[in-house]
Amino acid sequence: MGIATYGTTNVDWEARIDIDRLRRERLARLREQLEASSVGALLAFDFANIRYMTSTHIGTWGSDKLVRFALLVRGAEPVIWDFGSAARHHQLYNPWLSDEETDPVTGVRTPVPGTSRSFAGISTLRGAVHPDADRAGSVAARVLEELRKHGLEREPVGVDFVEMPVHRALTAAGLDICDGQQLFLEARRVKTRDEISLLTHACALADMAYEELYAFLRPGIKENETVGLVSKILYDNGSEFVEGINAISGERCNPHPHLYSDRMVRPGDPAFFDIVHSYMGYRTCYYRTFAVGSASPAMNDAYKIAREIMDESLAAVKPGATTADIVSLWPRAQDFGFADEEAAFALQYGHGVGLSVWEKPIFSRLTSLDHPEELKEGMVFALETYWPAKDGWSAARIEEELVVTADGCEVITRFPAEELLVAGQRYFAASGPLPAVRESQSHLNNPKARKQS
Image (cartoon, rainbow, N blue to C red):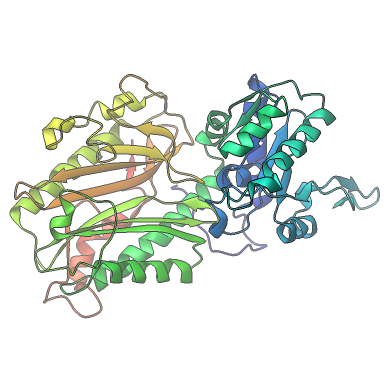
């Protein structure tokens, strides 16, 4: 049986995603990394790390502000400082941030009033607050106070990302600041069962978006129109954040600029797309390539090579294999027109996917051959392939997301990609391809057919 997908609501007649378990298991994994390390506490400013630690969120608008912060001290519960109104909301609606007491009769656990670990407090807003207001000093004072409560003020503090004034204030307070990002990423490397379910649902939303995009794509459509279409479909169906839609067509495919434009798609163009969005915080990174109107022999050949690289890579994924094992199967940068691996970085590529779009492990000939990382059951990552066509301007891009299983992997990106699909052909019905065309691809929607061993 493949990885299950569910509806978007909880029901009493089926065990679906368990959000309480998600919170507990994420925090437990972070605690495990903290206890095994040499640091006394972890201080987070990054939204993904704060969410992993505290299960709080204030919207994607603030993800680049470094304004809120959270602290996990050895042997203690996490503490968060947030916008005043958000902190108050956490106090009312986030009982896991409070101490709990158990009713002796019913056994029901309820939050103890006045014990919330959510407080008002902000950093410098990336320097926008006047330096003389000393918000950096306020951050340092609050962190130091918590550390002193637990007698850990002389132990190293692992920090993920930090503004320079805050870093100076922390060190001026006598704290030993070190890199904490590696501990966060290690905790997030292997996903829990509920994280895998959320990542799979995020892919299912992108599957749906690709189905609509395939029917919509035709000569005369502009790249930015496809971005609008896909974004609306995702938001209408529960996406929390459309981080980006790469829409690349025609001669823009080679070289690959990694962003969309207002270019109009023309007959015979290649067009590839990358859907990067999140469902309940969990991201996708999901490329698909189409030909528009017709596909040239050069384009078909490029797609076949990109697919062959992908299939060989998927077949090699299993617990105990390494990132070096995978990238050793990939062509060298010079084989597809680049001077070296840094120049070709992120074209033949792989990366973990979770609360961020690039997590551990990273797959690249630039780093993985000399610094291999072991693959483990429960990892979720994306593998990306790229191949330029012999015509000098076309190219193919394919990406699959997968879960490492006990004996191989299971692909969770389901929109057909085994063969190059041609969109916008005149003999297609207005509602999409003729039934015979879709039937020829129907086997690709079978989870068993897409499970690699």
